[in-house]
Each structure stands twice: as structure tokens, then as C-alpha cells.
Amino acid sequence: MILFWLICAAFIAIALAFVLPPLLQRAPNDAAEAGEKEANIDVYRDQLSELKADLRNGIIGPEQYEQDRDGIERRLLEDVSVRAADSEKPARQAAAGRGPAYAVALGITVIAIVLYLKVGNSAALSGAASVPPQAPFAGGPRGNGPMTPQAIEANVAALAKRLEQNPGDAEGWIMLGRSYTSLEKYGDATNAYAKAAALKTDDPDILVDYAFAMAMANGRQLQGQPLELVKKALQLDPQNPKALELAGTAEFQTKNYKQAIDYWQRLLAKTPADSELAGTLAQNINEAKTLAGSSAK
Image 1 (spheres, rainbow, N blue to C red):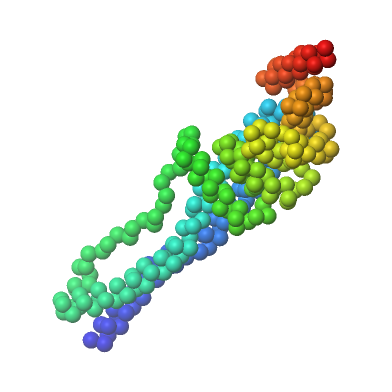
Image 2 (spheres, rainbow, N blue to C red):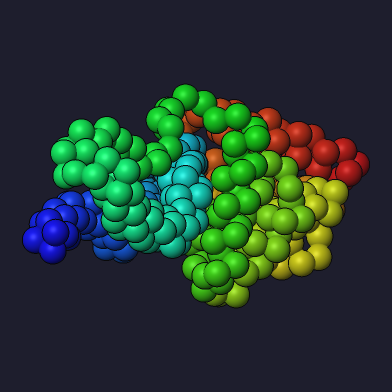
């Protein structure tokens, strides 16, 4: 009898050697996923930096820059939001992973004893039905189709939550500001850009986007702090396209048409002639000239 129990114990140990390791070895994968997440974010940041450099070097125009930047940021936002949702699972999985392990260990022992006591011989163990292991939980397939407004809102909320834990991420605040701007939540965008500007005080693009969001939140009025931000951006980069556009608009609002024409002409000179922006600038300049002539009479 003692020999039989020793044999049972040996079989249980062998069974546990196959069952327990897959259940317990989950934490290293979580660390790998976290490293992969940060690596992907770094790749997107490098792409944004290269795109900005191409714009400054005249390789691409303002419209192409805006389109490419929006595309990169949209992909990063989707990636961050999906990974932010996934990052909440490992802690629960790690804690839950040990529960099944212990349950399996105890269950195998109990089942072996009960079967032996009921049947009375070791043959019952060999005839016990085996339960196939269940596959670990996995999320559904991630589609590549267009995102719904609800999905976009969820992604932006996930990014905002991540930034609460990492408030020193200037690029993250920039992306959040642009996301809120695209959703026409200009008050939230203003707050996001304020945090980005505090982290990167000498970036003209941040200052201009900050000014735009603030102006939109204030009924499209550029006077006051928005105009101060635009002028500071022009001091840092006198040829900044969006700063020139907003500066011209601010001067036009105050009926300083000659100064508005000057800003818009400087922007028009560096804008592709066949672009939509060039056509809009030409119309604005002509309107400003007409109004300037009328006021001079």
C-alpha cells in the first residue's frame, strides 16, 4: 500500500511539472510587452521629428506636413489606446494565474484520493476522463477599418489617463491637444497645450497650436494671450507657416489690413501655387486690399 501511494505521489509530481510552469510564467511576457510599447512610441516620435525637419528644410509643404503629421499621430493614438487598455490586464492575469495553479495542484491530489477510495484500485486512475486545457483569454481581432466617434473618444480618454501617470511627456500632451482640437474640445485642448508649452518653452509649433486652441475657446478671438503666443512663435521662427497665418488673421480682426497683407504674403511666397491654401491666401489678401482701400478713402 505504501508503495502504491509513493507511485501516486510520483505521478502527481510529474503532472504538476507539466501543468504549473505555463500557469506561473506570465510576468516576463508583461515586461516584454511594456518594452515593446515604449519602443513603438519612440518610433512614432522619431517619425514626427523627421517630418518636422523636412518641413523646416523645405522638402515638403505645409499641407503635406499637416496630412502626414495627422496620419502619424492617428496611428500612435490608436496604438497607445489599445496598449493602454491591454496594460490593465497583466496584473489581474498574474494574480489569477496563481489561483488556477494552486487549484490544479490541489485538485489533482484530491481527485486521485477520491477515485482510489471509491473504486479501490489504481485502475480507476487510468480510466479517469481528462479535461482538455482551456486556451488563455485573448482579445478579439483588431480591425483596420475607420474608427467610430465613440472609439476616438475612448482613445483620447486613454491617452489622457496615461498622461496623468506620466505628466512629463511633452509629445503626449501635444498629441492630446491636437486630439481635443479635432474633437472641437478647445478648452481641453488649451489645457493640454499649456502643459506641453510648460515642458517645451521654445517650440514655436506648440505655441501656435496653443494660441489657436485658446482663440477657438474664446469665440475665435486672437486678441490678448493668443496673439502674444503667436508673436512669441514668430520670434522663435519668423517663417513659421501657421504663425504667419494666425498673425495675419489677428491683424485682419483689428482692421490692420496692411499688416495682415504682409503676414499673408510672406506665407503665400512659400506655399505651392496650386495648393488650396494658396487660393485661400490669395482671396484673403485681395479682400484685405479692398478693405484697406475703402478705409483709406
